[in-house]
Length: 341
Image (cartoon, rainbow, N blue to C red):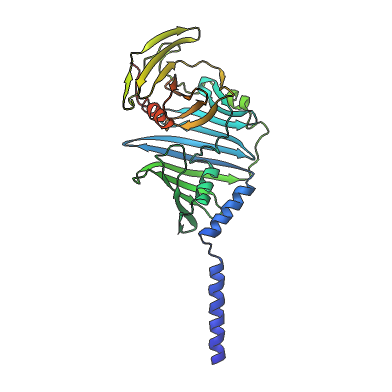
């Protein structure tokens, strides 16, 4: 009888040991995630992203291609306005492409290492690995991590990241310091070890491989160079706006609005031309997520000035001056929803 009891104890102990071995804890998953990053050769992701601001929201469809060591192709379509932008990184640099305008902007940068994004696998995995204060929860067959959000927009401070057991992202929710939800990213498809065409990350293919006749235009106006002046709703404290000045140039009309005071800067508005522009090699350049679209930030270290370039409703904006980056983003975001006067 005693032998039977001991046999039962041994069997139960073995069962507990086996069941315990199948359950990974937070550290095990983080180790696996780090190993996955180190061996990652390629992936393709599809999903939808919702950016929330007060009572309004912006909806995007997102497609991401990645191939080691640093090739990226990100296709972002603003569902609300049916506007598409492409971010491309290859051996020639980083490109921001507006297919509907047949225009691209090229610069040298280590993006996205310098500024991640909620739809990029490296950004999400690194946020989990690097946060020693991470909170881990097992939700059915999926993993949930609550970690710090490390993005250029410092309003995005915390995020929840859901992964499946193959370490593929399922969903990301990002919050501000007051725990207000600002971003919802849902991955509808994610595949590792994807094979791409040899020219998948080529700039010319991505710029010219569109049927421009079927693409929506960014402008509701005609094809002339005329347009209404769009004034940002946000002006930093201690800054005064001067009257707009209209200029006639060989490449069309433009409007310049100067601001002076605590910060001194100018906002130039013009109708963009089909062309490829390049940032000076002596400058520091990066991509800025403005919420309604992407901008290109150029910092001239010698003069301590910055230029933020973006397009909205068929108008190209260039914000030039000594504004801090956060204030430049505030000004740019306040253009969204404004109509020309």
